[in-house]
Length: 163
Image 1 (tube, helix red, strand yellow):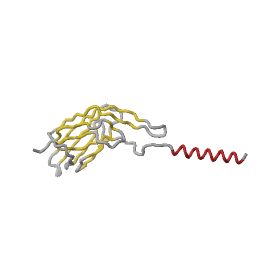
Image 2 (cartoon, rainbow, N blue to C red):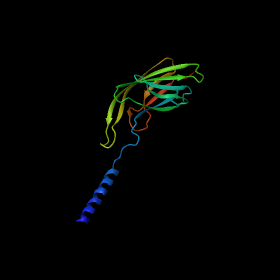
Image 3 (cartoon, helix red, strand yellow):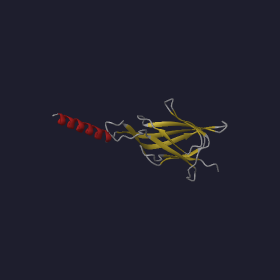
Image 4 (cartoon, rainbow, N blue to C red):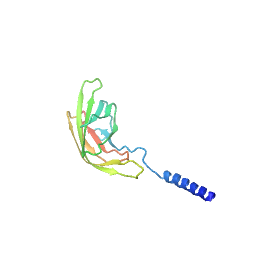
């Protein structure tokens, strides 16, 4: 009887250890939209100005005083159908400021992997438009509509050439 109880306990512990091993949650479940800057010829460039990005309707600073930025990632809201991002570009000696507002219309998609993992929110970008105080930005283009765990570029921001 004692051997049977010991065998059952061993099997129960082995089953518990094996079942815990099968949990396959993503370690980083933060979903971000990936942006990059390009010149008018389509070459990747870095912006030398100091760049700050804030989200409308919050007091959140998503990117604070970044310099020499060519590509960057920003989180998206979970429940809003459109995110409004305010970009502020400041010259090296604070001699000028340029602003751009980026509107990203999207569909929010709840992503569920298993009961043991937290739910994530994926997004499908429907459209993007911008408003700018200067002719600094030429156009904004969606290159990958799916915003998920993949680190793929989603939006290209084309800068106006200084010709």
